[in-house]
Structures are given as structure tokens and as C-alpha cells.
Length: 342
Ligand code: NAD
Ligand code: WQD
Image (tube, rainbow, N blue to C red; front, side, top):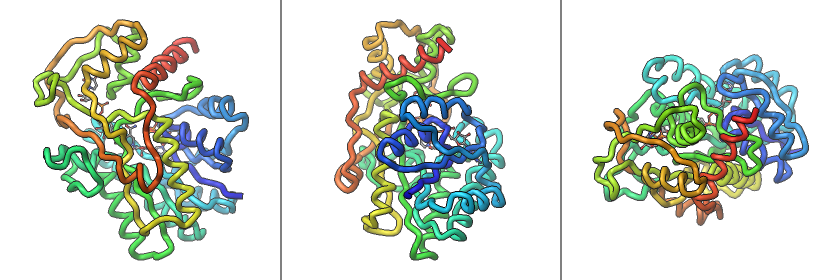
């Protein structure tokens, strides 16, 4: 049996990935301490897949518990490591919490993996490592320079990438795939799982859907005086289900020993940049629901524009994010309506 350990598997991207893994025939075990997710996510996964994934409520920084997990599930052949704290603003307020959780989890995981001779890890990294690329580096390839992180959260991603590279350098059996996500949005088409933002959403899409639902009075568009066609910031919004599928391919690549090098890096994006106003207007068009908004000043620390060159992932992984933006935004709205009906 090929079992994949999915840390952070009840979270937003993790839950969608567990669905895709199970639908591709993998056994999984989820490890999550439920610090930013809900146990009911397992019901949603079970309703979609027809089978409940194994779940263990464990903190990834807890070596004893993680070791016991690997003793219990002796069939683990690979790990996808999503578990991390991810709120950029909170990381500025509580940097030590972020360094302890995000770096402590990875170190503990790598130590336990080594002790149990598990040699494959796929890691959730982020386009945040590129900061604001120069014009010559847009769209961003994996070779674009890594820039000094703008937040402790971003720094944990850079440090974790370095830890993984150093660990692979020291252990020729360890295989690492670093996946640098751009901006994941949307929900499973069934609307049985999706993003569960904590409190007031900091990210664009949950704020848009909550405003459309009347939970928030109006969306604040942070700046319309950027050097972009409509003046608002540009990002590469990738459908979470497309993103999840890339993980199945990455894991399979490792298990089939197809990796070209011990550490591989892939940008996961669509290759298309969309502005905040384009997202907003497309959402209104697709759903027919009005979203009151106001243009306000720039948000501190925001990047003006960044989008991916996903050619490497397209060609080497044979993966492409091709869900139309309209369908992605419709899925986000369907999920918001599902939440309202609960
Ligand atoms: P999420 O918060 O929904 O999921 C993370 C999960 O990890 C949560 O369920 C949380 O309870 C769990 N967790 C946190 N610390 C843990 C610990 N010490 N032990 C066990 N479980 C723990 O976040 P997400 O959006 O699904 O992100 C998943 C990963 O992708 C993270 O590493 C994040 O940094 C990265 N990422 C996310 C985005 C994004 O915009 N969502 C973009 C780039 C990278
Ligand atoms: C997108 C755009 C905002 C909210 C952050 C992290 C990054 C990554 C993903 C993990 C920006 C604008 C937003 C609002 C707005 N996470 N906006 N009004 O900033 O690209 O990235 O999440 O690694 O590390 O920094 O995503 O969704 O916050 O913002 O106008 O109420 O929407 O200015 O242009 P961002 P976001």
C-alpha cells in the first residue's frame, strides 16, 4: 500500500489535495492540530470521495507524537507538508510563533522521516519568495532571484526551502519537490470543502464573497494608482483544485523515481495576471451579485504585480492550470452560499 502523509490536510489546500489523492487511488493519513481548520472537513472529504481519510490530531512540532505516527502507519512512502501558520500580518505581530511553528514543524518532520526511512517530501512554498520581481523577470520563472522576505511568514518559506536543500545535500536518498504557489482561490465544485477564513478575511477572494453575501459592508480595493493597466495590483490566481492536482503529480513523480535532481522547484500558477478590479468585475458578472466597493489607499507591503511563468511545471510535470476564471469565481460563490446555509 502506498500511503501519503498529508500534514495540514484538513486545511484549505490540504483538503482539496487529499480529495485528489484519494480519487487517484492513494491511501492517505492526515496530520493536523486543527489550529486553523475544522474536524468537519473530514465529513466533506468523505462525502466527495465516499471514504473517510485516516486522521490524527497531532502537532507536527511534537517529535514523540510524530514518531508514534510513523510507527503506527508503516506504509507511509511520501509526505506532503502543508502544515504551517500562514497569516502574513499575524506573523509580523508574532514572529516567534511563526518561526517556531513553521520551522520547528519541518525540522521535526525531516528528523522523523529519516528515522523511518521515508525519503520523499513535497513542500508548500510560495511566490512570496520572489517579492516584487524586476520587469525583466515578469512573468516569474523559477530562476528569478529570491528577494529579502517582506514578513516573518515569507521568511519561514525561504528558510524552509534552504533547510530542505541542505538536508538533501547531506542525504543523497532524500528527494524534495518545492512547489511555489501563486494565489490559490475557489473551492471544490461540490461546495463540500473550501476555504475557511478565520475572522475578517485578509485575502481578496474570501473578502469578496463575504461582501457579496452581506457579511461585510464593502470591499476595500487597496490602491488604484499602481503602474498597471487599471491601476490596481496584479496577481496570478490559481484554482485550488488545479493546484491540488499538481501535488498528485509531484508525489507520483517521486514514487516513480522520475525526478531529474534531488531538489526540484516548480512555480504553480496560470501564467496570467489579473488585477483586483478584473477579479471583482468578473465575480459580479458571473454571479450577478453586486459587491459594494471603495478604492482606498495602498496596503503596506503589497507587491504591485507578480504572475508566474509556469512553463517548467507545464512541460516537466505535464500539468496545466486551465480552469476558466469564471468557473473558479463561481465555485467560490457556491462555497460561500454553502457556508451561509449551515
Ligand atoms: P490552512 O491554514 O488552511 O492549512 C494549514 C493547516 O495546517 C491547517 O489546517 C492548520 O490547522 C494546520 N497546522 C498548522 N500548524 C500545524 C502544526 N504545527 N501541526 C499540525 N497542523 C498544523 O492554509 P492553506 O492555505 O491550506 O496553506 C497550506 C500551505 O500552503 C501552507 O504551508 C501555506 O503557507 C502554503 N501557501 C498558502 C498560500 C495561500 O494563499 N493559501 C499560498 C502559498 C503557500
Ligand atoms: C491579493 C490582492 C491586495 C484584500 C498573500 C500573501 C502571500 C500568499 C497569498 C502565502 C492584492 C488586494 C486584498 C482586500 C484588496 N500566501 N486586496 N482588498 O497579498 O497576493 O498574498 O496571500 O504564501 O504570501 O502575502 O494576496 O489575497 O491578500 O491580495 O484590494 O480586502 O488583492 O492588495 O493586490 P497577496 P491577497
